[in-house]
Image 1 (tube, rainbow, N blue to C red):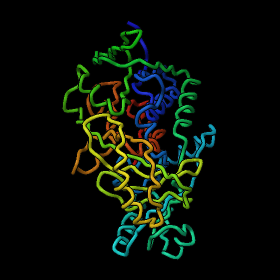
Image 2: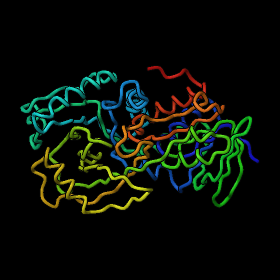
Image 3: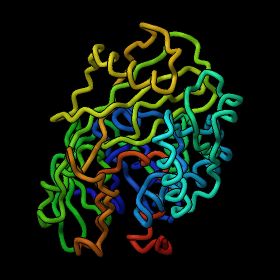
Image 4: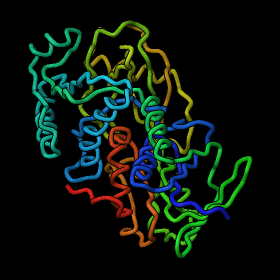
Length: 373
């Protein structure tokens, strides 16, 4: 049996950020990825938005890691040449009955340490975005967009520069806790057994399933996995907007919002559809619901202008009708197993938070100072 120091399961944006943080801390790191490329699931099927940290409950991991992660991510993009743009976001009230909601969001954001939101009235909005229909909005200037694949390549490159090794097509088929360390069964074309001192489960959608099959981990430390599909549609015409446009949040997500890619093309979504597994099919008929939601803030949306783009599935640990769960990053203090960290429910703002998540994992493993509120 081959012995390794740290094994990170999963090469999405969070797994790569965790592996990089461990490598920077001087650890020998092996990344196991079941697919033939990095970041093929949640990391490749999202809005590519750098979030400010506005909505999440005060003191939650989502709030804390998003705010610190956003600062770290902009710095990382500058240092490593990752394409991004701080384009800003407008959270819009389309009628007078929604304006109180904007003020609640602003107060909530302040509690999270987001101090730069500005309240705009209808005239200011019209000057900024003439095509937008809204009576008021919050401008979030620190919201941006990013090339998610470019980010993952930069994280992988820096992790490898510090000694990390990536193994593709290396699915984990079994896990067991030993005293000390872990035995990891790896399938694929060259099956092997590994013994690791440290194990970090960053498997995204598959993290609860892997943890549930881990011998030596008590069942009460494994949450149920839920899957919330989000469909995206692209705009066939040229967009009149230069900012991201978000309605007020809705249960399960942030509403049918307009985001931009780095080429300036617009896309809409995601909506929320609870599904039983990883079904990435897209029903073109869902565009009808999108039209109605979009026209509340953009009445000028042309007929038949939405084209099916792609879907993503949020790796949730809370189900329909339940409050959105916080990130679960369970270290030894939670489950009592030295060297083990399980990451569950790392949905949005996971990309924005990725660098801070890497630091937090190191803190749980007592490799750095713990994160404080």
